[in-house]
Image (cartoon, rainbow, N blue to C red; front, side, top):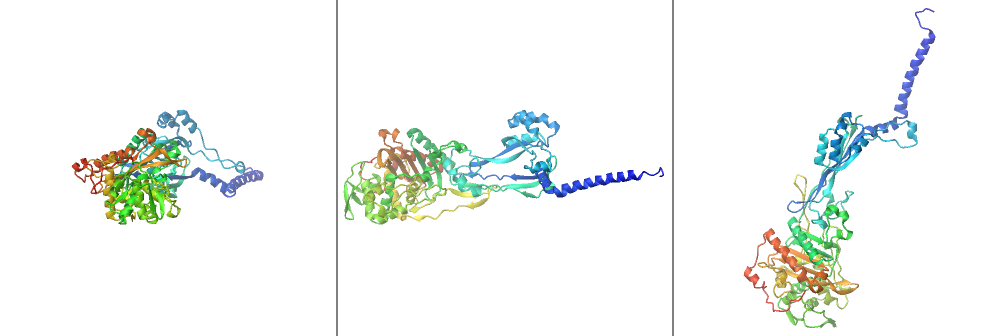
Length: 611
């Protein structure tokens, strides 16, 4: 064999080696791209695929003048990607630790975590695929200004995920109306829950890929859906009115330590609620610390016997039917009366009365006079007026939890109901029902629905939805309502039961109430609900104000909390502050006011009585 050629053995050996090498590569390619393709694609997608949720910002809740009552604070959870850190970044870790409020050791421990290598198929057969460590949280709830400083450090791999935290700038203001968003970001009560459809917005997302250094590859974005922020909801609440109301409730709490109390202020002509609060209340930013009972909105889910404030029903009904005039007289010294062939015992009076006119029955708060007015109407007709005033049914308040109250139909009345219901017993109502019943007189005979929402606006302030006035129903004629308004002025006169509510220079109309609480199935002589519900100016009503205080007896002189002593002065203080704020003009001459707020019907002097 010539020396210029290699032996056949060597050629064959070399060829076999090359063939085996390419064959091994081919076999490996077949293994990776065919046999194990699905498993490896899952691993690659885990390592490269990026799906980022962009949280939408929840809309604000504002009062009628634009003041923010609830808003969303932008926060960021900051962490780092161990794969993306550069060697020189460690020098800036102390500055990062100071901004985030963590230790350098925590950052070093997070940076030491690395993504595990891809395991062999056999290792994955008996367990789930290990996921690479893509992000380690360092701190959560970092404010935007601090996160801006973190970004200025320019540490590769340190970035944050933005989210929002619901905050309430005025803490406890309008707590029972606004409601709150719980720790799971779920609206749990009030406006937050009822208007969640408008407030919550819609989250966006971005789907793309990242390279080996965990940097986003924008060219591989497959979806980019921007978030849509929630709308702002504008309420009828006025922050100043609400502040006045809550301040008075705190004073009631300090002075009388009642079991609970409610104050409501509304526009007499539209029914819009300007202020509503309960005592005790709670801090919306710390709702989880409040007892469950305090979270209840007593104005709509608590009932009480309204007492003498309920006398407006019998008087309005009898006047509206033409059965009486303000000068019609009744013998209120009677202890029994015949009704439908039966002799019924009339309720007792706090003070002895003889003959009283309809005007005096109201101003002196006669129980027997109110019973006789109801008897003139008869069971069914009187019951019809009770229902017309809104008792025994929900007011239409938008939140859940409102109750109907307690009102039996005439077929279920006992022999004394027609004599006891007109004085506010044998019936139970919510504070809101009593408030809007008085409002029916203030606005000319129409029962209004309580309204809390005015508008929905987008982030630019453009109008999205405007809440119009709700349909209402007529309870009495306008003439009857005007007559009742004049009669109710007698209550706040020097001869009435609530001279404490009188405001010099203004016509104040209203009614006191002092109802005994039922304790262990019996009316208690030591536990009462004191109330005053009224409006002003009587001939041109602007505001309806209700003050209801439950069980303030322990700290009252004599141990009995009467409406004229506990609630009427609070009505006056609230009204005097709102007169200046809302620029309400007096209607009568101040000289007439000093002479006792005389109404158009003459009132004979008589004992006012603690009603």
